[in-house]
Amino acid sequence: MAKLNHLPFEDWLISGETLSPDEAEQLHEHLQNCQACTLLSVALREVDRELYAAPVITPAPGFANRWMRRLEAERRQLHRRQTFLVMFLSIGGAMSLLALLSLAVFPVLRSPLPIFLAFLYELTSSFTVASVLSKALATVLKAIFEMIPATQWAAIWVAFAGLCALWIVAMHRLLLPRRIPV
Amino acid sequence: MQDNESVWLARAQEGNAEAFSRLVETYQRPVYNLCYRMLNDAGDAEDAAQETFLRAYKSLKDYDRSRPFPTWLLSIAAHYCIDQARKRRMTIVSMDDLPYQELPDNNPGPESAMSRKEEQGRVRALLGTLTDTDRAAVIMYYWYEFSYEEIGEALSLSLSAVKSRLHRARLSMAHEWMDHQPQTGSAERTPHGEAQSPAF
Image (cartoon, rainbow over the protein chains, first blue to last red):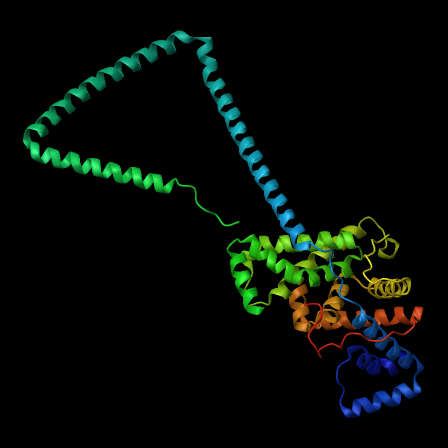
């Protein structure tokens, strides 16, 4: 019951907000009769005083330089981590390919003759197809050469050379190291 | 100063570390002070402040320029310190039992050193009675003179939660003061809202 009597006054004291003249008067009267609230009021005032008087603590000189060094160390660590990751992925990929290759090569090692014959058949077939295609291409090119006059051929070669030069310049510019701000 | 800050911020957001180091120079005091008051150890405060700036630099691209930069920065510092304090508590050591690293005393003379030590001890005892989030709210309220809204924004709390936490914290500190009855001192700083915070 005694606690209930302090409630609005305790809240007013702790909140520190501006009171209306009527509320201020009530609080003043209460403080004159209530030792607990008077003690609380003094304590709150002293706490405020203590905290407002406490200085802002400053770090040791050279804080920003130490931060820059830390950032550099962090970047180096990140770079190292990325390098390790790429290496790990490359080695892992190579190992997986090797494993797959081993699986594919295993039957060959057991019975190589049928596979060797199949390979020979594929090779000869490829040669035959290539020979037919080259003959057809030669016929078409011959026909085109006869259709286009020599002056037009010269113009085509000049245009082609120009495009090649343009491509070389563009590649050179693209591959130049860029300036990245640090 | 404000214009310079905007320029540095813009450059830092483009990835310029040199520009961000200017911001580090400008805000090292408030950030370090918050970390020191939260963790009560100069070494831990240095680490926490450095980490705060590192995190801020990394997430600078996500920073909303309409929000005040100090509030954003101190928010990162407060969250980091709250996490650190929780990790520290996992070792089941009370903050009062920790052998904290004292700050170097720049004022000569044994009297001033003693007075400063006593003052630090009193502030430490007052803040030591609070939970981590309440302590962060109190530090922002008293040292940086943040409004309830700013504290709420920095600590991701609602306005009513901030008011209730500050209410509870002030009561807890008052009880701590009543239990120990220290000698009264004189106020050096102005009360909340009357002048710009000296922390910046």
